Image 1 (tube, chains in turn green, red):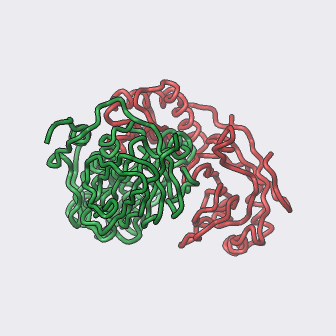
Image 2: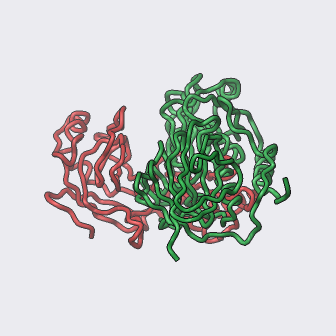
Image 3: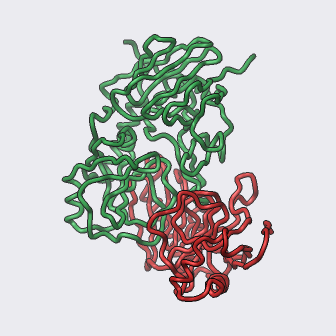
Length: 313
Length: 224
């Protein structure tokens, strides 16, 4: 049987193959990469009945034009962006059949920054170090670690789950997309900062600057002073809020380097990383304090909404 | 008993064990040994263990791991690692072509050090450096300590692209860029030695605890 595939007609602004992330190699300096909004990737895979490890496409701001070389089932999640299949609108958050030869196009985005397109069976490019995640900054991942280009042909695999396919999405239980900006919760530390700096962080709104990307968001706003500035390099988790000597914080995201030497005032909780991942340059971001128990409860709740029960409309 | 180590939360999915905050072979050896002992215990839900100059960070699945148990395991490993061996790592010679097109910042470092470029090369190649950690990009080794006379701080503005194999200085640290990448270190030479290759075993030439000697050479260099 001829292998089905997805052909990239136009690549859009930044379209990459992503799976859950490349864990297990950070001790060699290999970044984790993976989706900016992991919840939406997970949901897209669920909707088409994929194994959670299946790779999908992450679509940033301006979407690609894709042609399906074979009958496939796809699902679109994440950012609310206009999409058409052979001219007909594509509904979000539901499995959609796409016939061989059909073309998927994207239009203006309404809310959010990153959409996810899963295909039943998964994107079957050659994994690197056990993962199909693309670390664009480090050029590490499938296809030489680069964004997709016109002419790329992505084979569709067979990474299907034994679990039932989810058919209904209770929209009210999914976290909203940012509307101009978002507030995310953080845990303090690991570095100590004066109370005044913490207070300033909690009461200000920062703007995601144009110098923001998958590695991290450079935030513009009040200066945070009194932290250690530069210190001995150590590992830098996703969601870390670094404070360089300029006092303007940097929020580390999916393609962050594995280590860094700036003091870190706090770390965004895992449950709120998906929301942070939907911010675009020009959006605002604000921070709220949290404790560990609340962070874990929020993550459980977030995972529960992604693991939705099949039901009838 | 866990003297001189603090275990801190770094978000809800990582813990960091910090030892005395200085570039010191003994402290670094303890961090490396702590990571080794901890990994051997194969605790549930651990995703990555990353050594820093004076730290070990444990990444875990926040819903699958028990952070209390992880804290105990880290503290236990750190206690067992006290007094770890310092100089056990093997020595790797890295041949380097210094200066010219391979070392565009050599003259600048000489001006900073108020000596000749030849003297900079001599001072850079003299010590046996310790590999303290791997980070920044795949396979990039953080080496220390550079002779204070040539310990020039990094550039204000990084170069858009530093060629693969470039050898640089940033203050008391020196390092080698495994691939072409933007970089802010002062580039004084270049090697052709391959530092990182996913298809090879081991994938990274250097590991924390190894020692490096830079060997000034003329002409092309090859992997040992």
